[in-house]
Amino acid sequence: MAAKVHKVIQDAQNGKRDVDLVERTITSFNEIPQILSMVHITRLNLAHNRLKSVPPAIGDLVNLESLNLYNNQIEELPTSLSGLQRLRILKLGLNRLWTLPRGFGAFPVLEILDLTYNNLNERGLPGNFFMIQTLRALYLGDNDFEVLPADIGNLQALQVLVLRDNDLTSLPREIGRLKQLRELHIEGNRLQVLPPEVGQLDIIGPRQLFRLEDNPWISPIIEQLQIDTTHLMDLLKSSNYMSMYSRHLQSGPAIPPMVRDKNRKVSRRKD
Image (cartoon, rainbow, N blue to C red; front, top):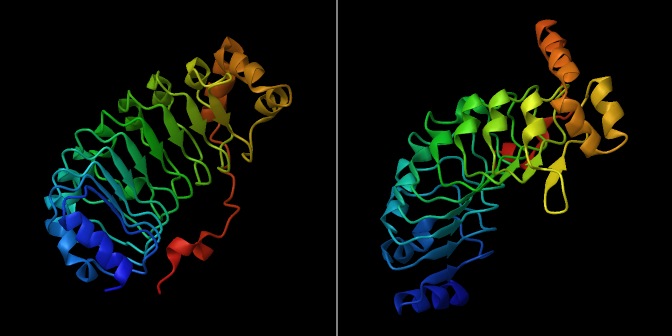
């Protein structure tokens, strides 16, 4: 064990609650087995390592409030993870996840969930994924979603929703139920129209953010975007757009092709 890693673990054994093991070339929890018995720790940062798996014993860290596993090589998560009753922040971005474990949505107090840059799509989510009632920020950018499930409307506390650079061809009308939403990122998808309900969201203003570039929008949306997003929101609220939206769906328009080769993503590597 490297001296710096040993020092961090020794400090934690002496009562330190914040364990920072960022960028220590750790490939397995077997290299740091002591961590899994330190039930007092509240923050564990293992970002930028080479972990390929997470052991079920992670669920024994009952006081954990923040777990950062960003930029590893993790392909699968244990079902015990969602048993962490005090976890508020979970960062799993830049890994190799294709699916999430059964019961993943059972976190009782989770507020921030980062799943950016994995291989996830709507078929890889467990049935209770959109039941995390406390979630304030959900990062799903750079994945493989073509459809956003209507259950997204259950996340009533959501303030930030990032869906950029997926393969989304539509958004559900239930997105309009997210009354607390202040940031919506849908740039870099295959969207042609927006649900009229988006026009009711509070996402335009100096403290809000609405990103929607790099989509093959229909011409009326493009025309309003050439002015500004406020004009777009006015369009979405209009009866004319409601009719336009309905006609578009009924016509069964051709779905725009994928424009990126995702087989070259880091998350697809087999090494």
